[in-house]
Structure formats: C-alpha cells, structure tokens
Image (cartoon, rainbow, N blue to C red; front, top):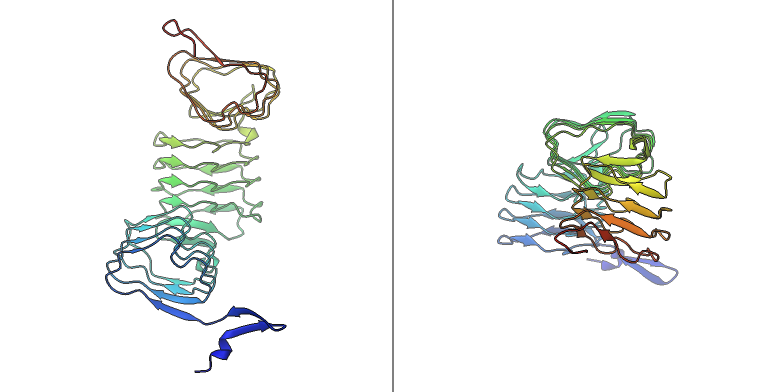
Length: 327
C-alpha cells in the first residue's frame, strides 16, 4: 500500500495526514469517555458494541468526516456536545426511547435534517432549518435542544406550536428570534432552560401551564414587549427584567426571585423588594453604579455571588427587622 496518497502537502509543508478510518469499538466496552475521539477528522464511520451504556461529553465532537454511526439500544446516556459539529453525519440508528440525551448532543449535525427542516435524534429536536414563518413541531418530541431555533437566519420565524408531550425547552432554544410573536407551550412542559427566550423582542404574550416547575435565569430577559405598564417583566413569580425609568423602584408583591441581570446597568438609586422574595440571582444588580439602597424582605434570602457587583455606592443592602437583627 502506498501511504504517500494519505499526505496532503502545500508548498512543501505537510498540512494533513488524510486517511479515512472506520472504527469498530470492541465488545465489552461500557462507556466512550469524555472527548475520546474529539477532533479526529479522519473518522468516517463508527460501529459501537451492544452493551455500551454511555457516550460521554464531547466524545465525537468535531469529527467533521464522520458519516455514520450505530447507537445500540443499550445506550442510556449521550452526553452534552457528544456529536456537536459532526456536519457530515447523515446515517444514525436512533437511540432507545428511554435514553437521556443532552441539550446539545447533536447540535450542528445538519446532514441529519429531514425534508421538513427538522433535525431530530431520539425524542429531541436539535435544530430547525426550514423556512416557514409558522412552525408546528412534530409529535413525539420531549425536548427542544439548546439553540434549536436560534440560528442567525431565523429572523423570519413568527409563531411556533410545540407538541403535547413536550417536557423541556432547552437553554438558548429561541435566543434572538427577534420576530417571534407567539409560542404555544403545552401543559406537559416541566422545565424552561436558561436564556430560552432571551432577546425575543417581539414576543407579546406567553402563557405558561401549571406543569412548569422550573424556569431558569434569563429565560425571558430582553423580552421587552412582555413588560407590564410599570416596566416589569415578571413570569411565574420571577422578575426577569426591569425596563422602567424610575430611580426608586418598588417591586410588586408576588415576586419570589430576582433573576440574573434583572436590574443590570440600571440608573437606580433605591429598590424595595416585597415579602416573599427568596433569592437574588448572580449579577442581578451588577453595574448599577448609582444604587445606594436595597430594602430586603425579612426572613432568609439567598443572594448569589456577584449579585451586587460594581455597585460602588451601595454600602450594604438593608433588610427589614427579623428577630431583632439586620442582614
């Protein structure tokens, strides 16, 4: 065999060893470790053994020539970014229904897109590459993966109907979909991930079902059309942002959490928080250089790291009397 065909030269410089490799993982392997094959650009196919249980984080990330892989039904977990940016991957055996797939396990695997523009692996929607303004997500999807609709060319997207049975909307799922006005969320959704609707500036109405138990920070940050008449963006008891212009602000009753960046870089002098607030997120008041006073409710309250970063005029947040002691 003449191996000289495998070398790629340019002006006398060896640029690449270009050999296509078919990998067969031996029987008895239970796990593909984190990053095991990441960046191996010469891999074109992988055969995984029955009995394999886990494919680790970044395991095949950026294997840009990988075209096919079988996923045994024994696999119970596929880690975050396990196949991210495997742009040539076009043939895959679907994992078992109960396999746990990460939010971004198959992000960037554009060759897996179906005729309707959906990139679906297992029960996770990893991307939408169609051109419809009004999208109905197929049935059988339980999770919207990270960045699924947040492509730079998705400014045309206006409405999305999510299917019954959906349980999770992943982080950054709709980030910067600036023309999105409406999303139908079924009463099976439990979790909405970090920054899921960040900068959806045209979103005018959002109705969350009672099934939602966890909404992460920044989920509705910079969704200014969701603000009430006083400039508060409050969803399910979480204050995501204040965009009013007052220097002294009284946060409405019913708020239980101040989300990350809620008052970031705001020209505030004083903020009064209501009874019932239990936590203040990281960077919630960061860069509020004029802030002098924050009145905290009595009782226990969790203040996350750097919640008041660069609030140079703020000496100490004031807390209402609780058992005769201040915070």
